[in-house]
Image 1 (tube, one colour):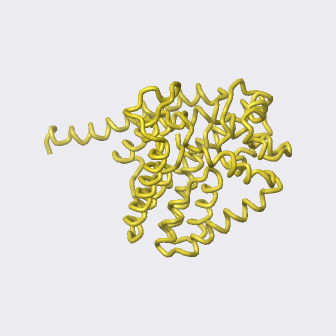
Image 2 (cartoon, helix red, strand yellow):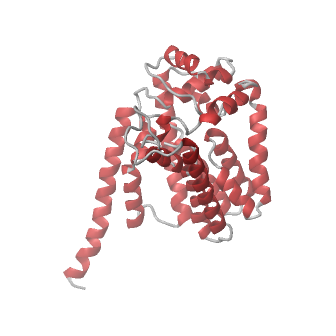
Image 3 (cartoon, one colour):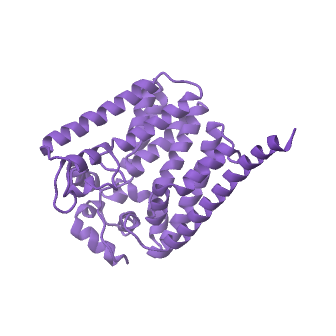
Length: 331
Protein backbone atom coordinates (compact mmCIF):
# COMPACT_ATOMS: atom_id res chain seq x y z
CA UNK A 1 0.00 0.00 0.00
CA UNK A 2 1.57 3.32 -1.04
CA UNK A 3 1.64 6.59 0.88
CA UNK A 4 -1.22 8.04 -1.12
CA UNK A 5 -3.65 5.38 0.04
CA UNK A 6 -2.73 5.72 3.72
CA UNK A 7 -2.85 9.52 4.01
CA UNK A 8 -6.59 9.84 3.45
CA UNK A 9 -7.74 7.53 6.29
CA UNK A 10 -5.39 9.34 8.70
CA UNK A 11 -6.92 12.71 7.83
CA UNK A 12 -10.44 11.39 8.07
CA UNK A 13 -9.71 10.28 11.62
CA UNK A 14 -7.88 13.48 12.59
CA UNK A 15 -10.35 16.10 11.34
CA UNK A 16 -13.48 14.93 13.21
CA UNK A 17 -11.49 14.55 16.43
CA UNK A 18 -10.16 18.10 16.20
CA UNK A 19 -13.60 19.45 15.27
CA UNK A 20 -15.22 17.63 18.19
CA UNK A 21 -12.57 18.87 20.62
CA UNK A 22 -12.94 22.50 19.49
CA UNK A 23 -16.75 22.27 19.74
CA UNK A 24 -16.51 20.70 23.21
CA UNK A 25 -14.18 23.45 24.42
CA UNK A 26 -16.52 26.14 23.09
CA UNK A 27 -19.49 24.46 24.79
CA UNK A 28 -17.55 24.11 28.05
CA UNK A 29 -16.48 27.77 28.06
CA UNK A 30 -20.06 28.83 27.42
CA UNK A 31 -21.29 26.60 30.26
CA UNK A 32 -18.73 27.97 32.71
CA UNK A 33 -19.70 31.54 31.86
CA UNK A 34 -23.46 31.09 32.01
CA UNK A 35 -24.15 28.49 34.68
CA UNK A 36 -23.66 30.93 37.62
CA UNK A 37 -25.85 33.63 36.01
CA UNK A 38 -29.48 33.99 37.02
CA UNK A 39 -31.72 34.02 33.96
CA UNK A 40 -35.35 33.80 32.98
CA UNK A 41 -36.47 30.26 32.40
CA UNK A 42 -34.63 29.04 35.48
CA UNK A 43 -36.34 31.81 37.45
CA UNK A 44 -39.76 30.44 36.46
CA UNK A 45 -39.03 26.83 37.38
CA UNK A 46 -37.25 27.80 40.60
CA UNK A 47 -40.14 30.02 41.66
CA UNK A 48 -42.69 27.29 40.90
CA UNK A 49 -40.75 24.82 43.04
CA UNK A 50 -39.98 27.31 45.84
CA UNK A 51 -43.64 28.29 46.16
CA UNK A 52 -44.62 24.63 46.47
CA UNK A 53 -41.88 23.98 49.05
CA UNK A 54 -43.12 26.94 51.09
CA UNK A 55 -46.64 25.51 51.10
CA UNK A 56 -48.29 27.93 48.70
CA UNK A 57 -50.83 26.70 46.17
CA UNK A 58 -49.55 27.06 42.63
CA UNK A 59 -52.83 28.51 41.41
CA UNK A 60 -51.38 31.84 42.61
CA UNK A 61 -48.40 31.31 40.31
CA UNK A 62 -50.61 31.99 37.30
CA UNK A 63 -51.21 35.56 38.47
CA UNK A 64 -48.41 37.37 36.63
CA UNK A 65 -48.17 40.23 39.13
CA UNK A 66 -48.01 37.94 42.16
CA UNK A 67 -45.65 35.50 40.44
CA UNK A 68 -43.13 38.14 39.41
CA UNK A 69 -43.25 39.71 42.87
CA UNK A 70 -42.17 36.29 44.17
CA UNK A 71 -39.50 36.02 41.46
CA UNK A 72 -37.95 39.25 42.75
CA UNK A 73 -38.44 38.23 46.38
CA UNK A 74 -36.50 35.02 45.75
CA UNK A 75 -33.53 36.96 44.39
CA UNK A 76 -34.02 37.34 40.62
CA UNK A 77 -33.75 40.83 39.16
CA UNK A 78 -35.97 40.01 36.18
CA UNK A 79 -39.46 38.99 35.12
CA UNK A 80 -40.73 35.70 33.76
CA UNK A 81 -43.97 34.27 32.44
CA UNK A 82 -45.62 31.34 34.26
CA UNK A 83 -46.93 29.13 31.44
CA UNK A 84 -45.94 25.60 32.46
CA UNK A 85 -48.11 22.96 34.14
CA UNK A 86 -47.97 22.77 37.96
CA UNK A 87 -46.05 19.49 37.87
CA UNK A 88 -43.13 21.31 36.20
CA UNK A 89 -42.23 22.33 39.77
CA UNK A 90 -41.46 18.73 40.73
CA UNK A 91 -38.22 18.50 38.73
CA UNK A 92 -36.73 21.57 40.43
CA UNK A 93 -37.82 20.86 44.01
CA UNK A 94 -34.57 19.06 44.90
CA UNK A 95 -32.65 22.34 44.33
CA UNK A 96 -35.28 24.99 45.15
CA UNK A 97 -34.41 25.03 48.86
CA UNK A 98 -30.96 26.38 47.92
CA UNK A 99 -30.19 30.02 47.16
CA UNK A 100 -30.80 30.75 43.46
CA UNK A 101 -27.17 30.88 42.24
CA UNK A 102 -26.20 27.67 44.02
CA UNK A 103 -29.44 26.06 42.91
CA UNK A 104 -28.69 26.89 39.28
CA UNK A 105 -25.16 25.51 39.56
CA UNK A 106 -26.39 22.24 41.06
CA UNK A 107 -29.23 21.97 38.55
CA UNK A 108 -26.87 22.64 35.66
CA UNK A 109 -24.47 19.92 36.79
CA UNK A 110 -27.35 17.42 37.00
CA UNK A 111 -28.65 18.63 33.65
CA UNK A 112 -25.29 18.16 31.93
CA UNK A 113 -25.02 14.69 33.43
CA UNK A 114 -28.46 13.95 31.97
CA UNK A 115 -27.23 15.14 28.56
CA UNK A 116 -24.15 12.91 28.75
CA UNK A 117 -26.14 9.82 29.70
CA UNK A 118 -28.80 10.53 27.10
CA UNK A 119 -26.13 10.75 24.40
CA UNK A 120 -24.65 7.46 25.59
CA UNK A 121 -28.07 5.80 25.33
CA UNK A 122 -28.75 7.25 21.88
CA UNK A 123 -25.42 6.03 20.53
CA UNK A 124 -26.15 2.56 21.92
CA UNK A 125 -29.67 2.47 20.51
CA UNK A 126 -28.65 3.71 17.07
CA UNK A 127 -25.61 1.43 16.87
CA UNK A 128 -23.25 4.34 16.22
CA UNK A 129 -19.87 4.36 17.96
CA UNK A 130 -19.24 7.68 19.71
CA UNK A 131 -15.52 7.32 18.95
CA UNK A 132 -16.07 6.63 15.25
CA UNK A 133 -16.14 9.34 12.61
CA UNK A 134 -19.94 9.47 12.44
CA UNK A 135 -20.18 9.64 16.21
CA UNK A 136 -17.59 12.39 16.44
CA UNK A 137 -19.36 14.49 13.83
CA UNK A 138 -22.65 14.01 15.68
CA UNK A 139 -21.02 15.07 18.95
CA UNK A 140 -19.57 18.10 17.18
CA UNK A 141 -23.07 19.03 16.09
CA UNK A 142 -24.36 18.59 19.65
CA UNK A 143 -21.63 20.81 21.10
CA UNK A 144 -22.34 23.52 18.52
CA UNK A 145 -26.14 23.25 18.65
CA UNK A 146 -27.57 26.61 19.70
CA UNK A 147 -30.55 25.18 21.64
CA UNK A 148 -28.08 23.23 23.79
CA UNK A 149 -26.31 26.49 24.61
CA UNK A 150 -29.64 28.10 25.54
CA UNK A 151 -30.59 25.15 27.72
CA UNK A 152 -27.39 25.63 29.72
CA UNK A 153 -27.66 29.42 29.88
CA UNK A 154 -31.32 29.46 30.91
CA UNK A 155 -31.20 26.52 33.32
CA UNK A 156 -33.90 24.80 31.29
CA UNK A 157 -35.39 21.33 31.61
CA UNK A 158 -34.71 20.04 28.10
CA UNK A 159 -31.69 17.84 28.85
CA UNK A 160 -33.80 16.02 31.44
CA UNK A 161 -36.54 15.59 28.84
CA UNK A 162 -33.96 14.28 26.36
CA UNK A 163 -32.89 11.69 28.92
CA UNK A 164 -36.48 10.66 29.64
CA UNK A 165 -37.25 10.21 25.94
CA UNK A 166 -33.99 8.31 25.46
CA UNK A 167 -34.83 5.97 28.33
CA UNK A 168 -38.30 5.42 26.88
CA UNK A 169 -36.80 4.73 23.47
CA UNK A 170 -34.39 2.20 24.99
CA UNK A 171 -37.31 0.50 26.72
CA UNK A 172 -39.20 0.36 23.43
CA UNK A 173 -36.26 -1.13 21.56
CA UNK A 174 -35.77 -3.79 24.23
CA UNK A 175 -39.49 -4.53 24.54
CA UNK A 176 -39.65 -3.43 28.17
CA UNK A 177 -43.11 -2.25 29.13
CA UNK A 178 -42.25 -0.25 32.26
CA UNK A 179 -39.01 1.03 30.74
CA UNK A 180 -40.98 2.47 27.84
CA UNK A 181 -43.95 3.87 29.72
CA UNK A 182 -42.61 5.36 32.96
CA UNK A 183 -40.10 7.85 31.42
CA UNK A 184 -42.73 8.90 28.89
CA UNK A 185 -45.25 9.58 31.67
CA UNK A 186 -42.67 11.67 33.54
CA UNK A 187 -41.86 13.70 30.41
CA UNK A 188 -45.57 14.35 29.99
CA UNK A 189 -45.81 15.68 33.53
CA UNK A 190 -42.64 17.78 33.50
CA UNK A 191 -43.33 19.77 30.34
CA UNK A 192 -46.43 18.43 28.62
CA UNK A 193 -44.46 16.67 25.88
CA UNK A 194 -45.04 12.98 25.26
CA UNK A 195 -48.60 12.98 23.93
CA UNK A 196 -47.64 12.08 20.35
CA UNK A 197 -45.30 9.20 21.35
CA UNK A 198 -48.05 7.92 23.65
CA UNK A 199 -50.52 7.99 20.75
CA UNK A 200 -47.96 6.09 18.68
CA UNK A 201 -47.95 3.37 21.34
CA UNK A 202 -51.73 3.18 21.12
CA UNK A 203 -51.68 2.95 17.32
CA UNK A 204 -49.20 0.12 17.57
CA UNK A 205 -51.60 -1.55 20.00
CA UNK A 206 -49.05 -1.50 22.75
CA UNK A 207 -51.89 -1.09 25.20
CA UNK A 208 -49.92 -1.98 28.32
CA UNK A 209 -47.41 0.82 27.73
CA UNK A 210 -50.13 3.28 26.76
CA UNK A 211 -52.28 2.53 29.79
CA UNK A 212 -49.28 2.75 32.12
CA UNK A 213 -48.40 6.20 30.70
CA UNK A 214 -51.95 7.43 31.28
CA UNK A 215 -52.25 5.78 34.70
CA UNK A 216 -48.92 7.04 36.08
CA UNK A 217 -49.50 10.58 34.80
CA UNK A 218 -53.00 10.63 36.30
CA UNK A 219 -51.88 9.08 39.58
CA UNK A 220 -48.99 11.54 40.04
CA UNK A 221 -51.27 14.49 39.32
CA UNK A 222 -53.67 13.27 42.01
CA UNK A 223 -50.96 12.38 44.53
CA UNK A 224 -49.21 15.76 44.17
CA UNK A 225 -52.39 17.83 44.52
CA UNK A 226 -51.86 18.42 48.28
CA UNK A 227 -48.33 19.63 47.51
CA UNK A 228 -49.07 21.76 44.45
CA UNK A 229 -52.53 22.92 45.47
CA UNK A 230 -55.95 21.57 44.59
CA UNK A 231 -56.72 24.70 42.58
CA UNK A 232 -53.45 24.63 40.63
CA UNK A 233 -54.66 22.57 37.68
CA UNK A 234 -58.00 24.42 37.29
CA UNK A 235 -56.01 27.68 37.33
CA UNK A 236 -53.62 26.35 34.68
CA UNK A 237 -56.46 25.22 32.41
CA UNK A 238 -58.45 28.43 32.82
CA UNK A 239 -55.58 30.95 32.77
CA UNK A 240 -52.74 29.53 30.68
CA UNK A 241 -54.17 27.11 28.11
CA UNK A 242 -56.76 29.42 26.49
CA UNK A 243 -54.09 31.94 25.49
CA UNK A 244 -51.08 29.63 25.11
CA UNK A 245 -49.39 30.39 21.82
CA UNK A 246 -51.81 33.15 20.85
CA UNK A 247 -50.02 36.14 22.39
CA UNK A 248 -48.08 38.41 20.00
CA UNK A 249 -44.82 37.54 21.78
CA UNK A 250 -45.50 33.85 21.06
CA UNK A 251 -44.84 34.53 17.38
CA UNK A 252 -41.30 35.75 17.94
CA UNK A 253 -38.70 33.82 15.93
CA UNK A 254 -37.37 32.35 19.19
CA UNK A 255 -40.43 30.10 19.23
CA UNK A 256 -40.05 27.44 16.58
CA UNK A 257 -43.42 25.78 16.09
CA UNK A 258 -45.95 25.68 13.27
CA UNK A 259 -48.21 27.95 15.29
CA UNK A 260 -45.47 30.48 15.97
CA UNK A 261 -44.35 30.50 12.33
CA UNK A 262 -47.84 31.16 10.99
CA UNK A 263 -48.50 33.89 13.54
CA UNK A 264 -45.14 35.46 12.75
CA UNK A 265 -45.94 35.54 9.04
CA UNK A 266 -49.59 36.56 9.11
CA UNK A 267 -50.35 38.64 12.22
CA UNK A 268 -49.44 42.21 13.14
CA UNK A 269 -48.30 43.69 16.43
CA UNK A 270 -46.42 46.99 16.69
CA UNK A 271 -43.93 45.62 19.21
CA UNK A 272 -43.45 41.96 18.30
CA UNK A 273 -44.66 41.59 14.71
CA UNK A 274 -44.30 44.89 12.86
CA UNK A 275 -43.57 43.35 9.41
CA UNK A 276 -45.85 40.40 8.56
CA UNK A 277 -45.90 39.07 5.00
CA UNK A 278 -49.55 40.02 5.01
CA UNK A 279 -52.22 40.15 7.69
CA UNK A 280 -54.88 37.44 8.01
CA UNK A 281 -57.79 37.35 10.46
CA UNK A 282 -56.74 35.85 13.78
CA UNK A 283 -59.43 33.18 13.57
CA UNK A 284 -58.11 32.04 10.19
CA UNK A 285 -54.51 31.88 11.46
CA UNK A 286 -55.66 29.80 14.43
CA UNK A 287 -57.59 27.47 12.11
CA UNK A 288 -54.57 27.04 9.84
CA UNK A 289 -52.32 26.42 12.82
CA UNK A 290 -54.51 23.68 14.25
CA UNK A 291 -55.20 22.14 10.84
CA UNK A 292 -51.56 21.92 9.78
CA UNK A 293 -50.42 20.72 13.21
CA UNK A 294 -53.04 17.96 13.32
CA UNK A 295 -52.13 16.94 9.76
CA UNK A 296 -48.45 16.67 10.69
CA UNK A 297 -49.21 14.55 13.76
CA UNK A 298 -51.54 12.25 11.84
CA UNK A 299 -49.04 11.86 8.98
CA UNK A 300 -46.20 10.98 11.38
CA UNK A 301 -48.35 8.53 13.32
CA UNK A 302 -49.72 6.79 10.24
CA UNK A 303 -46.25 6.51 8.71
CA UNK A 304 -44.74 5.20 11.95
CA UNK A 305 -47.39 2.84 13.27
CA UNK A 306 -46.27 -0.19 11.23
CA UNK A 307 -42.52 0.22 11.55
CA UNK A 308 -40.60 -2.43 13.47
CA UNK A 309 -37.04 -3.45 14.28
CA UNK A 310 -34.40 -0.71 13.96
CA UNK A 311 -36.95 1.60 12.31
CA UNK A 312 -38.72 1.93 15.67
CA UNK A 313 -35.84 4.19 16.71
CA UNK A 314 -36.57 6.63 13.87
CA UNK A 315 -40.35 6.49 14.20
CA UNK A 316 -40.21 7.17 17.95
CA UNK A 317 -37.84 10.09 17.29
CA UNK A 318 -40.24 11.44 14.67
CA UNK A 319 -43.13 11.23 17.15
CA UNK A 320 -41.13 13.17 19.75
CA UNK A 321 -40.20 15.83 17.20
CA UNK A 322 -43.79 16.09 15.95
CA UNK A 323 -44.93 16.72 19.51
CA UNK A 324 -42.57 19.70 19.75
CA UNK A 325 -43.16 21.45 16.42
CA UNK A 326 -46.95 21.10 16.74
CA UNK A 327 -47.07 22.44 20.31
CA UNK A 328 -48.68 25.88 20.67
CA UNK A 329 -45.44 27.25 22.06
CA UNK A 330 -41.93 25.79 22.14
CA UNK A 331 -38.60 27.57 22.31
